[in-house]
Length: 178
Length: 153
Image (cartoon, rainbow over all chains, first blue to last red; front, side):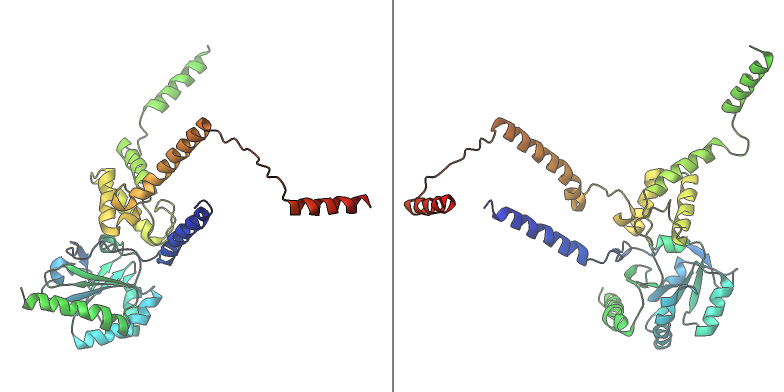
């Protein structure tokens, strides 16, 4: 027993490391799932006088996508977003985060605009309320304005088909069977 | 004392006791509290820094938010709570004492107590090391004798 003690300790410590080090330190747990989308009043990207609030998200399932013209990965997911804007399973809403209006507009004319509405969030007001840590980040919001899923990173076709689309179907099922 | 020294002392007293006109005490207080709160919030972009010391844009916006919340009358705890409900326990640099952090908090103290228990146990029952010399077997005696003879030669 005495001789085995170091070995046992070693195994316990290695197991601890094995579990601890295999976790991705960047993956933060989302606090926002199944909580109402935060209240906000922010202006439209193109028309500064036009204001949006939480009500603008309701009555339709929306995919709220945080992006910026400075965000390189946003270009990578852009094609997928264009596709989603055409097949209309969800309403695409953009949060233009920490950007300037001219830069964002240039970016959107260059790559095309997949969003039906774009909220301009220059000083991270909404981003912090959503617990956003980086772009791109996307939230699936149901018809009553509850956040149902948060995806950190690029929406690839696989992410859409395997993760996000099933959540959308779940939301639709909720409505049909009360 | 000379008159000039008196005047100097009076001026010093005035300088120390009156408020500077450009900032109110509450501003100073806000600044002090904001600093404290910022030092206990983790920058979520650059993970081993607090938002007080980070240059990240998001940290800058978070600092602004901390200040505006304190200014609007939130307590320090309320600001930390606000961040915690959005970013989780993760955003707090000092982990809260709760179920999943219980081991983390208790382990160092438990270790210390165990160490003292061991010390006390050892001082009461000192280890007396007794060397037990077993006598040599006849086989070993023969070997030894051979070796001794070799040395003599």
